Length: 393
Image (cartoon, rainbow, N blue to C red; front, side, top):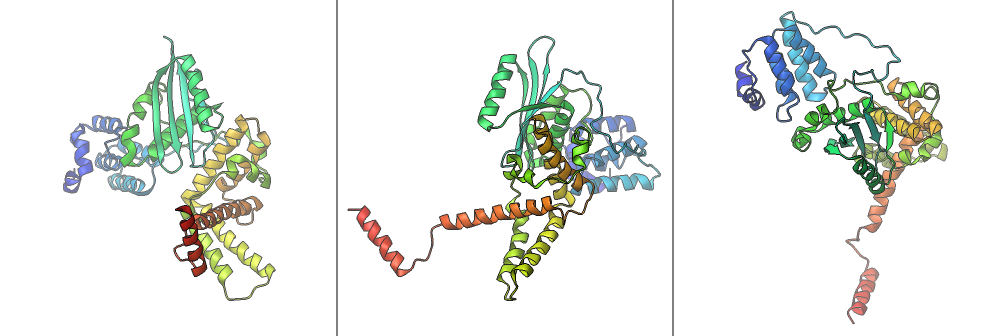
């Protein structure tokens, strides 16, 4: 390892955990693969170590890691791959998947089952996998999956069938939403993906997730998948989503974070405060232009991917609760983001952004009404003193 890597605390922890830089390539890579699931080991340290192993298997593992990485970790992986490239070592070519590919079949027993809730108002949901045990009881793994924070809670272990029923009823009662049964492979992907997105500082509370997962599922954590709604709702997903989708509770209660909408609201406020006199038609046109630019910023990149995934999951939940038409609308909206369609002029997405902005503005106005005023007029001050005097009589 280089001198810089030796003094890097992350790389030092890697060595302290048992990684030997001078070990044979196969042994070193096997150890790194084992340590990759250790919550105390940085994935970036694993990538740097792989970049120093002149072996095609190291390049293959880096390519595998890259499919799940983003931001600084992805850049670290690319640097490691480039180091191997300079030594003539390339990762294997990725096979191209058919466009219609959905969740890949896995060599797992068919007695795995999964349950899902819808998202709550904070962007969190429960994903639950169970497996009957031959010796009796039910092995379970369930987690609270958050859009913003990854995997924020986890429960594993064995329970009885009665406890399973009671726990499910209690979750539905306390959460106020139904748990629906669905594809365990989708549940596995959602839990693993949430674990990968969990910030390093918060990994400790779910650090045993991968170990608990192996008690139910023997196969490696799944790579990114094509969501099953595109197969199950293929016909519906090809149509323009209806505006009635906005009336469904899962969409109506969905609130984007206010800081994401703040630049849009500020631009709308500036337009309303402009000294330029506009007739109503010109004013509407200006607002439409602002919302078109908002569509470009909100529905692209990482945020666009998150909105798309929320729509996919909502479509799946609607389908499993018997609302196929509504599920088709949500799948159609997700498909348009996936396919890079021009969303600026989509009636649904225009209305969606208007509703999101309107919700934040209404909350700000309500908060302003509830906050006590710091400055009172003389008349208000007199009335306040009089009211206080009467209270103390």
